[in-house]
Length: 148
Image (cartoon, rainbow, N blue to C red; front, top):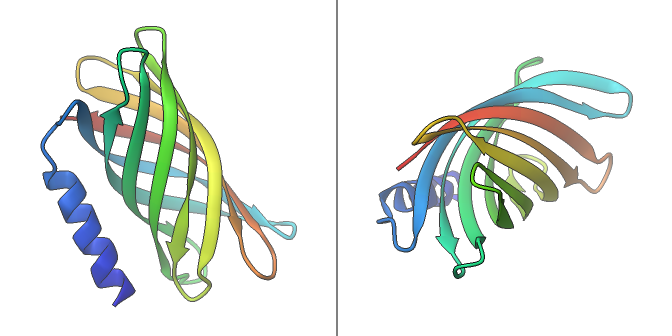
């Protein structure tokens, strides 16, 4: 059921017309660490950012799927909100907060920066912390995406 809801949210987000904002899709990869261990992680996301006025402030929504690449770990699906601002003409600085679904559901929060790489492409760096009931998990990732 949870996976169906995440997929529906991702499809709706990707299909949302650009109403005073922009839609985006991205691929990302990085590292996850907890309790002295670290593993590679890779994922995809789709989202839409809504402009909150002329000052460059925006609110965004995102659906994602990420996987730790070792030990046959499950795919982690997430729903995330983000709030940020334009930085100059080429960047966005933002904070995130959301919920991740898998065998160990968790609240997550983080921050990131996107930088334009042309008209529609962007690169990003992002940190997230997943607050599990046992050991918290940290991730740091870089991504490449397309806006439309």
